[in-house]
Image (tube, rainbow, N blue to C red; front, side, top):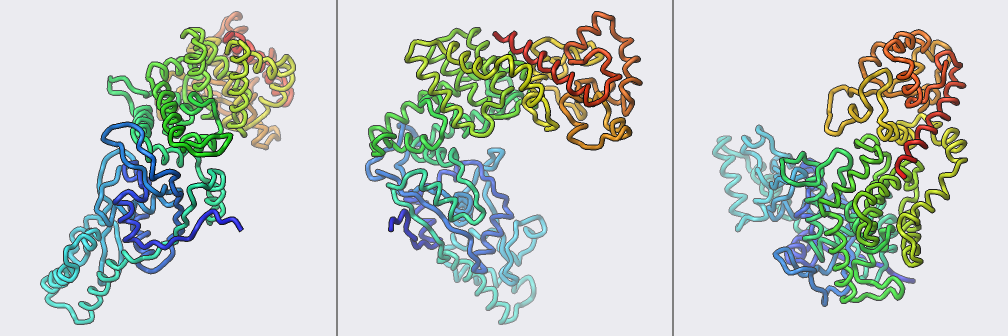
Length: 585
């Protein structure tokens, strides 16, 4: 029988010591700590009462005796013997409290996790003002493990309570002493730890994780790759985190990644760098690449690991380069996707950026042409939901097609156009999109977002308004109530009055139009034939013709039966999307 792991015996003291000396890698002590203090309190309470707190899963680091850190800087360190696959938040909590170490909060402030303990009542608390003023509590349990003499510490606490209360009973003294002793004795708390051997494949590690985890939580591949980076190239992970932090924080006048369209997480930027550097989308390959494993022979090599990290460093530098990033974001705007709310899938953004970077560095395409090409590819992949579902598999195929095309002497434009033309045919515009893509009541329908992006490309004005869709979807505008609202052309209450009650029918994409919220309020629940004449008075005949084209309104739509209206409008919306897409050629 093949054994991929062994059950190892650890107590808290050994875990803390092995983390302290670097045998067990706990890079997340320097990463944003996501647990709440109440969770840390509950962890210690469970241990104190002898409850199980779940298994820990370690993976032995291949070639840890011979490896060296990537880079020569203050963050370089010798890789540990074991990497933590499952249990990082628990171990970070334990290490930070027992050793009285600061953690990095989600806002990047550093502070200690403080847990108080009431020995007489054997109760753990996160200290508030009342607890901090209550001398019956040990204000910070870290003091119990850091005391030079536990007996003296215990006696001093008891004497303090004697003074305050005018005496304690012998039973109370004994209970306090026993409780402090039990707390200190948590250093002997036994953990269930599975150690996975260094030769175990990445796929087997992920499978072990899923099988032993009682909640069936899937191992997030990019999380573990970030752990590998922390071990071998901590500066690289810090760069990813800093980029992601600045992408979310309003710029203070200095150059940063901040924008209103896409605020990536570190693992997403890492995915992009791996796509550029290794032409891979399946993150399972990244495990192997970053551990120095040959994908054909499955043999590890320290030399190969260094080479592959060098390739990652180069790709990551290009990925995080601010000029590249903001040029790419211009391409999304050119595609009509001017705000975050129009993005239906993060994968569309990530993989479009991979294509942008490949176009720049592998094909040498100049900036204007590359921006246009990227905009077209992003619009296409967003409209068709190309990276919805098996996103990695689809991107692997696309990267393979790009690579084969380049080998055969094809330009990137030729390769991407051949993919687009194979999928977007005349039947797509005339049949597939009107009868499938635009038939949905989903709030995040990709075809609906493509229609709105198309209006931006075409310079359309809001229905019955002189303002453009671009103006009211302007990035950075944040109001309590959006200046731009989706309005039911056939209002909900009107449809209910005529016997149409199904939400999926009422909320069809083809029943929505973009209007200013003031008009939305005024229209209320009137029938289209009732409210339309007053609004048409705002428009000249020429304006009406243009408005009806942009908003895909058939002549006499206000008198149509609702099902017929939806059918006709979907056809016209498909024409608007097609016309906008053709402008990106």
